[in-house]
Amino acid sequence: MNIPPGFAQVNFVLGGTALPRGAQITIGVDNQTDDFGADGVAFHASDNWNFAITPVWTELGTLEKVHAKLGPNATGPEADNTTPYDGADDYQPTPAQAALLVTKNTALGGRQGRGRLFMPSINEAGVTAAGVVQTATVLVWQNAFNAFFDAMAGNNLPLVLLHNAVEVVPTPVTSLTVNSLMATQRRRIRRVGGRKKKPPA
Figure 1 (tube, one colour):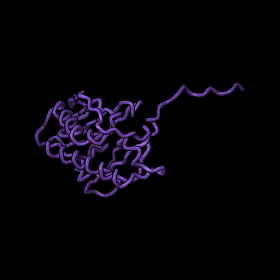
Figure 2: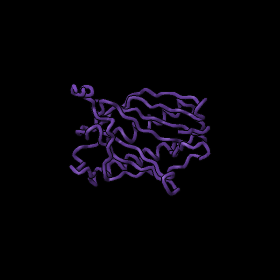
Figure 3: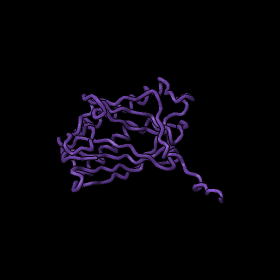
Figure 4: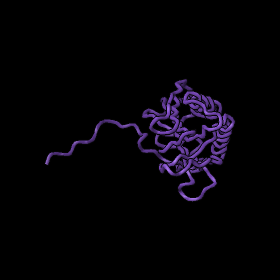
């Protein structure tokens, strides 16, 4: 992913009992207004997660660290905020491979104008067997992501979509939308044992 000067990529590194193989959520931010260093970007992102997401996330999940990488890719500084935050809600989470799909909306059309992130370990009781997220659960998480979105903008770190192409300027994200159908991330399933050996010929 190309990170131009004045922008940053932020990785939220998740773990805990709910995520035995870990998970990451990635966003891009515009760092041009206040020009925070990598430490500052990581701190604000971590603090805003704790403010908006921690209260509604399972107590079995942990934000282990936040990694911030400033542009440009080759020479931009990077830093970690390693303050851990456990979720505060006592619900039983969905399986590790299931995730809430959150769309990053922009003013552009087409695939280049859309992004997404995957929020794992939401309330299992709020999801049907068909993978449909119930209305009340959607509302809880929509409010949480609205609060996170607004908090980042309030710190002069508004969300953007970063692109692979060097010539494409990062696109401002206008809102985050929580979808009512779960997504899956197969790599988050705990692997048990090794590969099965082929039977002898």
